[in-house]
Image (cartoon, rainbow, N blue to C red; front, top):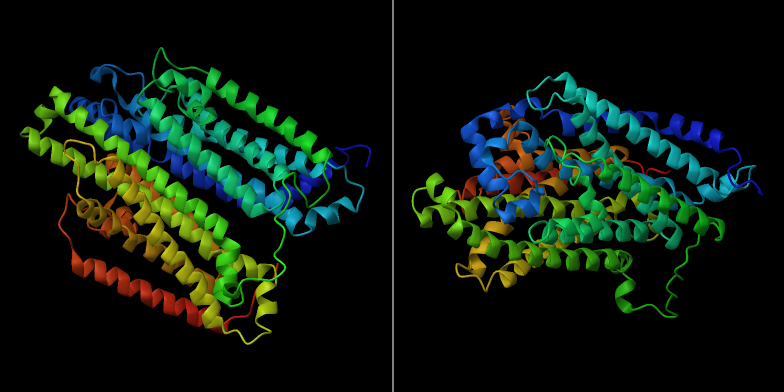
Length: 540
């Protein structure tokens, strides 16, 4: 087609018609995640509580690295609005970004891999029509989400969060990040020839910029203006005198610049290929590749190695925060007023930081395991397992191979992350021992295994709904990140498996509870396998 945008409107209507339920579910989920906690944060408006939170979240460089910075320099000004802005802006922007990356890759590069785009091109459709329709849908989605998010916070009429302009700034800052990272995914989709590589590279860049911002936020905040991810909070919503729409403008500007580059690259390439040449296949396969486990490991080795390396690097970055935290404890007079004695203050702050750090880290590791395990249903949809089952291959071997690959990978990833933390903090005056870090960090793997057990149950009974596990992971992140701060109902806390994990070193080990979770996980896995063994394979 000489007209690259021909029939864009038709494809746009088709996308909306096909995805409307998923988009509505996405909007409602994001509103529940980002706006539902606004009314629950009124406890932070108490002056004594706000002063404590100011010490822990603003003055503590380790917590700034996790939650993001704020320009507030006086505890009396650290009211509900700035507290909400600091704790929610970065995490909401990241959540929007992650979902956008997955959606854009699935609707662009993945459809090329599956031959759907080539089928579209056989009709009177412009070369850029599908991409443009996708961009229009994504932009419209984030604009609607931004407006609804701002109005939903405003409607709660919470003191400090009832300024409409501030609410719109918060909503557009976070939604703009979602659109921006969708454009990053679109660009990488033009460069690389596989959906898995595109996702890996986009998430890799997101993780790299997250690590960079952790370092710059506690050293030189102005450098953050060179980091697109930092624009999610440099608008400083709810902080009077510091609110800045420039970050939103820069985010959309970069997004459309990436879109323009993507257009140029797509016009110059053929369907199904990228600009990086595919790796040439070996003439003779290795012996380890002939068995089914060898095939799975060979297919997933790049992603596994990437995640393991990223986990170790993230551990090194988190480990550097222990030194900053020790300096904060020893030099801050307010800390000594909040706790009884220097040693008690140090152990209490360090212990609670370890609980927060290790729990969030384990959720990231759980996401790694979920990606690996859902590969089973992904291969099933592409009819690849059906061809393998024509061979003498049992369902038990397929099920157990994917499950054990995921479990062993997350165990190794968690270990490497904790090992990175241990190495980096060795030079500190109050360095923790290898056993202390491993005991406090590895216990969270019990929750990760439980998440994988739930996923295996979904894969057995309702494989088409397996992606609901991401909703539960988002819920775990929300509860771990802000659960205590929001004082949520006890029944809601009890829905989180993380609520039952012993918070070492703050709490004592609860072996009966840990064993019960592991036994329950094994039961769910066996139940999932029995369902998988009996059900028909899915296609499409």
